[in-house]
Image 1 (tube, rainbow, N blue to C red):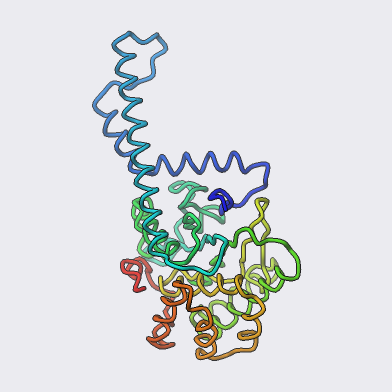
Image 2: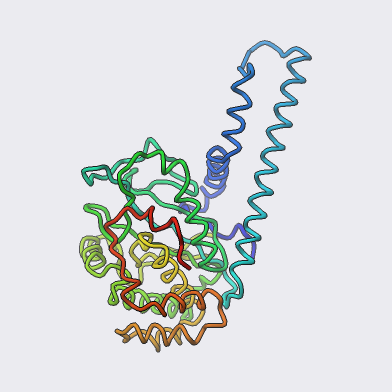
Length: 337
């Protein structure tokens, strides 16, 4: 499946070309390349002049362009090498499709007021804003499994753009008044809208209900989020958006970004529900216990994502119940997987 199948940044098909170009531009200008180029140009006279360049200036410009493209190429090579390492660490996975995500969170000041980042961050890109700049999203490159996604989110959460916000807290969970936060999950290449697909949605709902019941997704906040978003259908069970490129976005889950272990469990469980929807519905639709979640996952331990999840389960149910009302940056320093 081509890497380009997934567009996590929403929009109509007619806008996708413009969006992708803008995304690439944002990724570039927020990368170490931009910093290197700023350093390079700060020692020269790289200023637009309406008069023609002299031969010496033409040579200087050619050298600068060569340095620019060399650094861009090296940066891309490093990214490709890192992606290969992440894919190798992922191990064996049962799914053939890619998964992606765009979990939401807010930046709070010392008085617990939401900071608007509309003039600080870009709207699109791997780190961007939504809800008129009041909500932030991280949008890692999609992968075959949850381990690579969580690793990529860890890297994004350490990005200087977030550190530069000067906030007291980065807060996820389900509900930070008045904002309803989602942990949206994208499933690629299986959006047929037939009965099998409908089974996937209800299977993912079964996973979400159980995770909420167990307080792995914060129960009280999830109830409040669904209540506050009822008129718009936000957070309701079965909430899905279909994308022009053939993938779908599951939007029922609250934001699980408050803890990397919770993030990993939510992503892995949602993936398994899409892989085996009928079996998941049968096992979890009426389940209410942590033991039921463990027993269901045991059936898929050929998947290395699941093996990691089962190791988390061995630490006990209460070890996975995390208070969302914290600055989650500290938790993401170490993944614990």
